[in-house]
Image 1 (cartoon, rainbow, N blue to C red):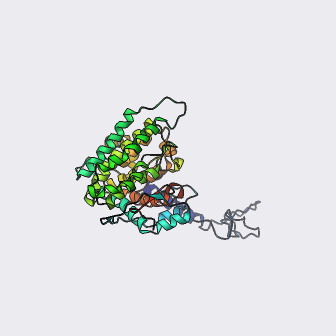
Image 2 (image 1 turned 90 degrees about the horizontal axis):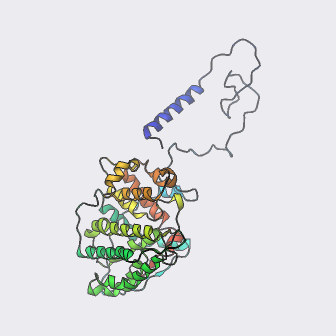
Image 3 (image 1 turned 90 degrees about the vertical axis):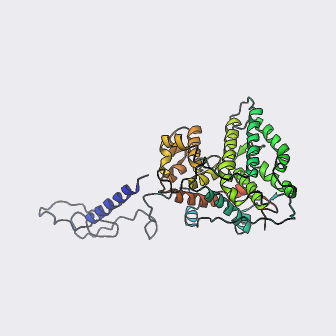
Length: 405
């Protein structure tokens, strides 16, 4: 991708060439020669070499139809989605805004959540609901809470966040206790099912460990979100839908008042960072397959949200720009501090070959001039490519905390 200065220069050179080509050519020599006429353009009937009129019909236009083709900019849009997606709709959509989470009042009737989305009509129904706006607003609020902060920066850590982190640490330790088995298939180690079975068995007691007494009846509603946050035990896969379930679990805790606004910074830089470490270990040890991967057109085989949170961290950074992801020294020295760089470093670790070939979308985004535009574009893309896609959202759960209205 050309820098903007080169693009501007290229456009100026093109303009000059067009002007020079349209100037009246010098008069032809007086000697009589056999001359083949050439056209200035398809719309003229004069020769571009001698300037004389000719009765020969001009060549047909290279495009079909009456009008010329739509103008294509030299630089492609930053988020270069595959042809079957509505690029224009995403580009023109407004950037999602943060919203306050509506907290429930006690006593509250909790319920076992269930699946409700089965068709594009159901997606549109969910998109128009307050539940959708509040949930997406929560994701934006989490993103804004870490703007300009490194992971190691001091942040408020409530007792709840400390307990949640200890739960995730326990899940990481289980991986060491349940080693992968020897098998012929490349993906989907069967030991993951043993790990996931223990997760389902212990989840209720893990939730009760940090919920206050008056909210413990809510275990029946939040446990399904939690157990669905770490992949599918039948398919032995993981994707952005499972990641979304984890944030839905955090959103439910926020609706219950267990997680407060002052916790948001810690939720991202402590809890979500620990969750990301857990998932990377699960992916590498048990060889989880990508769930419904977009292939090279996806941001990543497994994750989306750390790119949103990570780009927010880097907004207004003095030195690091989106193109800095191609600098190996920057990745080596700062990937522990910024989630976006951490994701790029992990992609480089698990994928071989040219970055532009195995991750063209990430490579394309690196040409965006600043991190604020990257963050806004990723939020719009998350809404369109995750929260509005039936194959992903058909597994999403609705109860009393995330209502199907």
